[in-house]
Image (cartoon, rainbow, N blue to C red; front, side):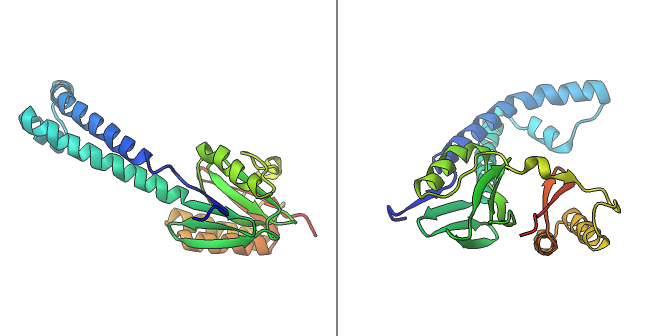
Length: 228
């Protein structure tokens, strides 16, 4: 990227560290498999097949094998984390957010607030409607703050300034219209079935009805968008 923009993402130097940590864990596992299998056989007279198979290998084979598997596992963990966090590119005119499912740009005039809500980065407009809510990491708070403030964006910190306005959704409660309950039910089912695209579409439909939704574990929380 040019010097006229700042890119925030996970440090690629962490990948070798994850691979090394995985390799060390794999090597250590090779020495622990035997005692674990013996303990299981003594206590419950059974042990998982993969563990018993590894236990039958001499250490001269199991140590390098599990070391390699561990290194690959560490690399995969980092890659999955990197995909979840994505990349944010900030310049004077716009914010670009790249995720594993696509990219989006938001102009400076659109963005009224930027903040982290746990491990999600949120952009809102002038009436507090969410323009974007994407995966991030609380460890990037400092770098995100530097990037946005460098270009004069309204960085609000590592907590949603409207956190207290969110309430847990209770199906069929009188606090919401039935049309909103219907959308929230559909979104709950979409998440349960792993249909992330449909869940995002339902988030947009809820926003059109003046409701912002976020997730806390397997629960949905919502707040109303103030009237303009």
